[in-house]
Image (tube, rainbow, N blue to C red; front, side, top):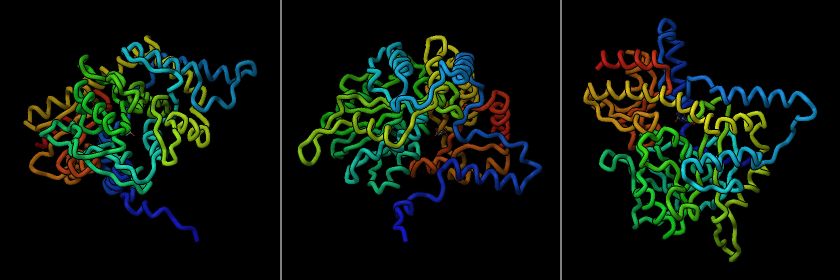
Length: 400
Ligand code: MLT
């Protein structure tokens, strides 16, 4: 009989967004007359089609695969040089220097933030904000690692800061934050980098929502802070930036400076370990997608993406206006596609989830799914259409 990984007993039966989908399906089956009325503002899934640069790139790469002269089989596991250079150029246009050799192409920040835990031993002290994107917690729990939480609360604007009395080895940060939409300032990120350098810790920085930062003084990459290349890995994705949730493309920067001494005194490089891990377990993102991503990462490609992002941010404005009108406290929606608000009338978040689904057929994400500090909060996404978002908030306005 196989001995199973019993750490799986310590995670919820299903992943947060799978659980939401399950509950909505049950509701649809029990209420077929209301099923068509449902507005989904739960999972952060985009609704705008791919941009022209992405589509042209996809078509061109498909055509290349149709002729033997340009056909491509296995690609380099780390990603084609042309797309790693496109990522590096994108950083450069934002004032950040990233070596293309430090860039690893993948199919999603979810996969990479989940898989990176394999590089670290079980007895690390892992520091995770609460509330937080559930992947960081679930993957470490599945791996039997112990997590210490730092509280994100209204008092600290959901932006926990380092506590010198806690000695962490690995720190997860996400800014702009999923789920709260809060965004660290440069000074705050510097405090984290200083803490990591002083404690020889590694920061796993998720910047999947960087393109939504609208206030120019806010950092979009941890590498905007000096010294971060000596303590941080950054994960980013085109899922939200370019609407690639179904197309799949992400990049992870593992600087070559991240070298640590192991128990027998030898040195191990996280860059080399990640390369070894990826080349063993992953055969790369499809060439067609990498080619399209490289077009998206050009100046013109990004200009088109910003058109879609403005569209979504108009939804964020509509959601925020309604919450303001109702005097419901919230964060996010300015530098992030998410709006995180306090559940009205003292409700708990799963209670509000059911209440909204039953009464106005609006689906959101209960804050409790992101940690105990989310128990009385709720997340709405601005990735819907204008029409559906407006309709959802009109229904919300009538309900409260
Ligand atoms: C979310 O809704 O939090 C995200 O869409 C999930 C993800 O990016 O995996």
